[in-house]
Amino acid sequence: MNWAEFEGELARRRGAGSPVQFWWRDDDAGAVSPELKKLIQLSKKSDVPLALAVVPEAAEAELFKLLHARVTVVQHGTDHRNRAAKGEKKTEYPAGEPMESALARIVDGLGRLRAFAGKRFLPVLAPPWNRVRADLLKKLPAIGIRGVSVYGPRKSAEPAPELRQVNTHVDIVAWRRGRHFIGESEALALALKNLSNDEPVGWLTHHAVHDAAAWKFLERLFTLRGVRWLSAAEAFSYTPAAHG
Image (cartoon, rainbow, N blue to C red; front, side):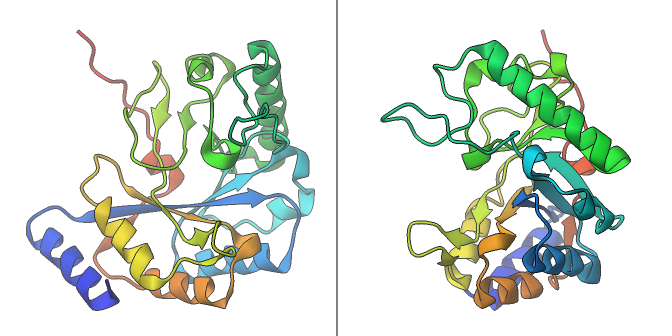
């Protein structure tokens, strides 16, 4: 798929009364780096809202001084440490960890980011490696988490009472193929595949590993016309599901 084909599909949907909504999440923020500065500047220049997933224990105070009005901070775990048991996929929240330990760690991270980011913080958990144990989800609202974001089409907009789920769908990094940009055709095809989901299409980036092609793609993506880019606050605006 190329840009012309993708833009044609966007125009078709717009003409049919189904305008496309996107949102953007970038993971693994913490220390200030040239790549992070470039990311934030790109958001400002393009006027595209950015949900910056920050690792609380890695966060530097200087990071929060760089943020502009279109950047929202969400919580990327607490320490981004892989606690998976042997044979389990990478996760900060393994099935064998006591629930109390996982919750205490999330609460600690929540407090750190609230103190650092203030009003720019949205209590949404974007777990490292996009994995979180299912039984943990129903506990999150009680500790102040109002949203969760992983990768792939969601099964439910409300996986637990008072918890909103809005996922990402297009990771532009080819993690198993050298960590380079996945390519224009693959990225656009993934986005097209997810246009019919019941949620905005989420673009997932990782500023620390972007190559020149990835940055170039994002610059082009952000020039698309007729697309509404949602802020994290808009994407996670909580409306209780109807029951009964």
